Length: 570
Ligand code: FES
Image (cartoon, rainbow, N blue to C red; front, side):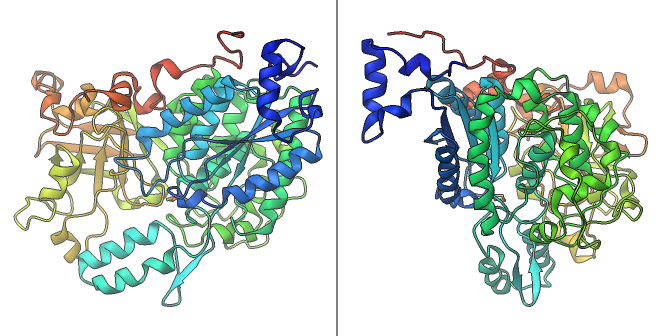
């Protein structure tokens, strides 16, 4: 098989000379004669602290690539630190994907190892790899180790919400809250709850893009480096086998990813990411597939935010393979992985070592997990709720809407002692969708009004066109589509309208006659914060981003361009 990189390096002409000569710098000529050129797309960055250790992982990948006869090439790519990037890392996911895709295509590469960790990094890398369609395999950077504060384990992210609510409720001092900071982040690695980073690593493995058994390995664990070495070797093998995403990622692969998402009780953010990756591959995945496939899957993993344990507990208990073995009959037996073998083949020797962390199929944490897809006159294109993270008593609820037009409006009024709100109210926050914010921030899990917290209220129904952190919990309806800023009905709701949530019936409605709702003006200009950006990425993003129900990708990035460059000579 002639390598793609041979288009740059083969021959005696001036172009081949230039391509080789500038890469020599001590590299032997044999590097350019039939050896697969493997990029290591690396999201290591000091500003993405969850991924800062990936240079060490990359070194192990390099060793593996060399050992298998390939040539490893560092390719630093756009990195997104979830806690640092403003206004929200989601605004930049598509940019990171586009930049990575273009660099993979533009360079003399035959395959790629994708190094990610923090929330958006693995999704962006997979979107890029799917569109350029070169042999690609992910090494997830792994979660951090569990920290403790006052003898109790701290769930990174989830306990930030809990502790901050305690400060607002007056049961924890601000000084104590600050003291817990350095206990929260104990080691290298990404958040250790079942947040978006953990979810996407596990889901990427179930999808087939990670060597089975690797996702969830804690970042400081030496077995991660061993896995990185093996993955480097595999990348060379994948080039020889022409094993590209387009050749092995099918609807069945996404079916398995959804089963895994439900069984681990994963983040709602996985929905927009999987829809976007599928869109790049031309796989016909819809929002309803998440409900249809995921809702009959039991939640087996007892991890925060829905449960008790943390990611290193999951790894100790047997990891994703042990979870998937419990639900093996629900998996697509034909869906393949980067190894070339079906995912189900990798489950043979998997075992559960701690049935408190990974529950037996017959004793699940939640009998029917997954993510429920709601529709109704408030969400014609769909909205999500994660029942396992919600209060059971609120899954059927009618209450008066209290509408906030923006995050700023919410913060300005939520703690007003005169706010007309009670425990049955439904908090509505709009203007937070992909276009409205822009970037669809994780604000749907609105903090509760202070005066209700003081009365002991700990959960209320909340409705938003934005997203929710995977580390958050509560009865939160999110990803409402179309969003208010795109003229969705959420823009027509008024404070005092009665909202009807019925999760078992999969409904989200506002109890306003359709004629009255139609008469009301969906004046998006009144949704504060929405103004078409004047220039730059934000302008491109707002003009082209799709709604949450189709993955919030840019409309012109959907699909694949393959690895062929548009002009091949100069
Ligand atoms: Fe990076 Fe949570 S902030 S994974």
